[in-house]
Amino acid sequence: MIRTTLPTLLFALLASIPLRSQQLVDRSLPEFSFDSLQLAGEMHFLASDFLAGRRTGSPGNEIAAEYIAAQLRGFGYEPINSADSSYFQEVPLRRVQAPTTGLVTIGDNVYSMDDDLLVVRGPEASAETEVVFANFGWVDPETGENDYADLDVEGKIVITRAGLPGDQSQQAVFRGIQEKAEMAAAAGAVALFEIYSLPFPWNGFRNYLGGERLTISAGESADIPYGFIRFGDDVIQRLQQAGTTMEGAVTSSGMRVDRLDSRNVGGILRGSDPEVSDEYLLMTAHFDHVGVGRQGGGAYTEADSIFNGARDNAIGTISLLAAARAFAERPPRRSVIVLAVTGEEMGLLGSKYYADHPLVPLEQTVFNFNTDGGGYNDTSAISLIGANRTGIDEQVNVAAKAFGKRVISDPAPEQGLFDRSDNVSFAAMGVPALTFAPGFGGFDDTIMRYYHQVTDNPETINMRYLTEYCQIFTLAARLIANRDVVPFWTEGDKYEAAGKSLYGTGK
Image (cartoon, rainbow, N blue to C red; front, side, top):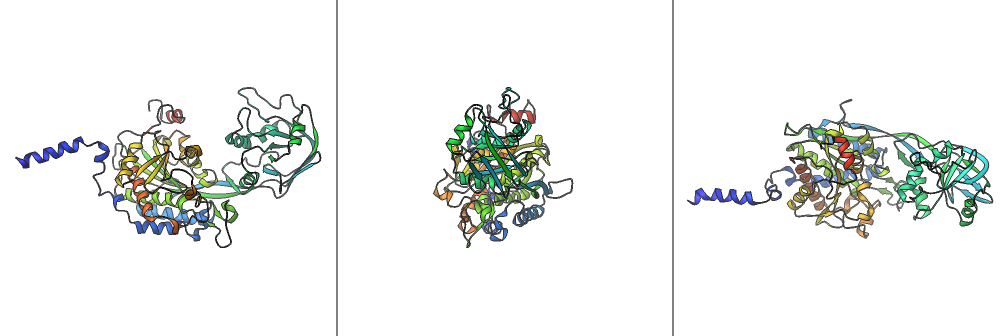
C-alpha cells in the first residue's frame, strides 16, 4: 500500500508547489556549476592595465572586442553579421574636440576658452559685429513660437537663455545643444552663445563638454560657432533690455572632428524549440570604459592613471559571456543574441547604432536583458532597474532565490538609471528592456569609491559575488527565454506605444 500511494502523494505535493519553486529543481543546468576561478581570470584580463581602460576606439577596446568574439566563436555561436560572416558590427564614429582657441567680446567684457567661454560646436570663424539677445533662441514649427520672428539677427552674435521655453531642465539644455545653432544660423546669426545656468560647477561642465567626445552624427560641427558663456549679472541685464544691442566680436579656431571607428561584438545561438526559435532574446552588456588619465574624467596620479572598469562594466561583460557559455551547453527554447556593445560611456553609441541598424529584425527581438552597473554595496542582493514594467520580475526573483539572493527593485530612483544604460536604446524602439545590475541601495561612499575611479581594479572585486551574479543573470535570462508568453510593456508605460508600433497593435 505504501509503495503505491507514495508516488501519488509526491506528485500531489509537487503539483501544489507554485511554479516559481518547481523551476528550481533542475540543478544540473550549467549555471549551477560555474567555475569561479575561470570568471576571476576573465576579470583579471578584461580589467587589466594592459587594456588601458578599454576606451572606445582605443587598442585596449579592440583587444577586448577580439577576446569576446573569440569566446563566442569557441562556444559555437553563429556570427551575428551575415553580410561578412563576422562577429562584428562596425560602428562609424566621429571624435569631436573643442577649438584650440576661442574668444568672445561683448562691450568691455572679454570671455576666453581658458576662463568663461566654452565652444562646443561650429567651424572656424571671425567676426566683429553687434550682439543681441533672443530669449531662448527657439523655433517651434508645431506651435508657431519663434524667438527670431520680430528680431533682426542678420550678421550678429546671438545670446540666449539655456534650455527651452517652459523647460530649463538638463535634458532641455542638451536638446538645445543639438538644435539651437541651426535655428540661429537659419535666421542669419554668425554665432550663438547661451547663458550658463545649470546647477553644476562650471569647471565640471566645461571639462565634460570641452573634452574629447564621440558621436555617430555628422552634424556636430554646425554652421556657426555655438557654446556657453558664464556671464556676470550686469551683462545679462543689459542684454535683456528690449531693443538693446552691444558691440562685440567672436573668433574660434573651429571644432576638430575626425573619424574613429569601433565595433559591437555579437553571436547568435539557435533556440531548442522550433516553434519559437524565430524569436530572440537579446542579451547585452557594454565592454568599453573611459580610458586613461584626463580621458577618465576623475582623479588620477602618476602612479595610477588607468580607469580599469572592473565593476563598470567588466562584471557585466563577464556575466554576458558566462550566460553565452551556459546556453551553448543547454540552449533555451528561444534563440539568443549575445551582443557586447561599444561606446556606452560616450553616450550609448553602440547600442543606439545597433537599434537603428539591427542585424536581426527588432520585431523578432522579444526582450532586451541588459547587464550593467556602477558597483555594489549589498552582496546579499542583485538590482533590477526597470522593475514591474515588462512582466519578467517573477523570473528574476526565481533566479535570485535559487542562489540565496534577494532583488532590489529600482534603486536610486532619483538618478533615472533606466534611461542611462544601453537598455533604453532598445526600449525607445519598442523592445521590452531593462537592466540587471549588482546589488546596491544607493550611491553611497562604497559605490563612489570605485565608480569611474582608478581604484576600480580586479583586486577589489568580491569574486564569490561575481560568480553568484553571473549565475543569477544566466538563470534569469534562461527563464525569460523559456516563457510561454513573450514579455511586453505594462499598460501605460511610456514605451508601450513604441512597442505596439514595433510588434503591431495585436501584441
